[in-house]
Length: 370
Image (cartoon, rainbow, N blue to C red; front, side, top):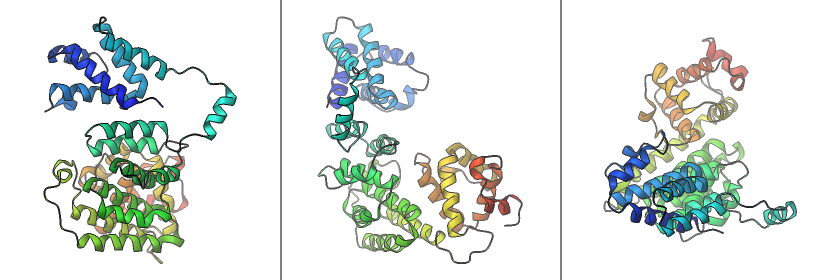
């Protein structure tokens, strides 16, 4: 398996050596790369070496090996006499465009494949070798473990007992995407024993468990949530924790307890008995949640909340979170603050022509009889 992390680090060092201390010239090169790369925002407040490293990471996040190859070729063209850059370009050409594999060999290789997708391995290797922002690691890992064909349970089985904090967090994020009741106790323990950022992601994984695990096991979910919440009450905040100080969102004990309580409320919404027509029955709630998460975009959700409810999304949740997490936060807030009917009606009306939202029960919210 190619050591992508090593190549990225060597590329960073080669770029820094090529430009030496000429930060302006480096910035001019970046200006020509791609319009979507906001160099000023990425580099704000960082040293010149950090800006180079952010550039390398951005190219990998943007297009993986092909992105690294584009960056290496661009710098090598500017500095054609640098052997270190030429060697990296040659290596990336081989890795980014591998030779065709015979069908029989491909089938044999698939059968013996590592249960961890290569893209996930690359992120983990990079995080192991460098002091990363764990939120950025999570942002990089989430789309990788959520790709079609990824067996998230195998990922969790492989990583959940790792000595690496990052690998255990990868297991948490895999279970966030596809919950499994056999991991409820393990996730509950993560909210307590892990450092604040991975612990917070564990509370979000438990929230998705509350949203998706079947009715017959909702009692197990609720027990795990309440056990974790009770144990959090017995902990004392480590005020010196660097993760608490550096996190971009609240991950302290209070934030984790609040997320667990939100998950508990989701279970209430999924188990209401004889609810009024102004809200959703448990079966309707599950169908509605699945449609919103899969077929509504973040931009559409933001527009509905802003125009119809009068609340910006960032007041209710972290917009960087995936749609399933956002839906949970919005629905719990809507129910607790008595605008649940208004929200469902707004979604129903906004999606009136969308074939994915033609569930019969939404008619009462569209025509105002809910």
